[in-house]
Length: 120
Image (cartoon, rainbow, N blue to C red; front, side, top):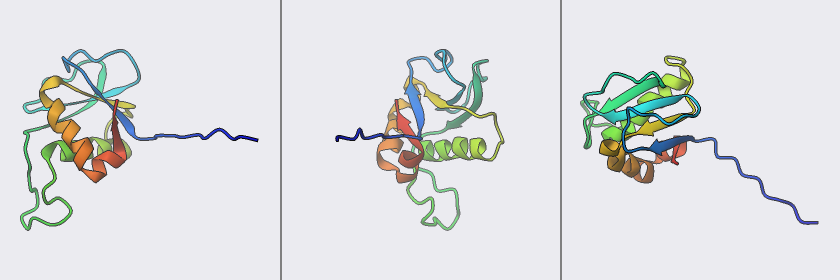
């Protein structure tokens, strides 16, 4: 007897769109964009923004955040807000073209971001 393999990817999908203020129909979404953040569209239940580049938020440059990009840290903020109930539950993250390259890099190079999110 041959068994079928099942896989479940529970990571949050990240959807890349040309215009972030036009969120495609679907489940509740969070908006991730470059700063300054625009007003959240009605379809977005949460939002985060980042300046771009690499930031070191702790003065000591500790190992927990050393060399992590601002896009990766913005994804962290979204994930933590969702997990802690600080924002409504969202099932996907929408990223506009201006922020796409840095978010894709975070998903490819940052282990924590890759464990929580996946490109869609």
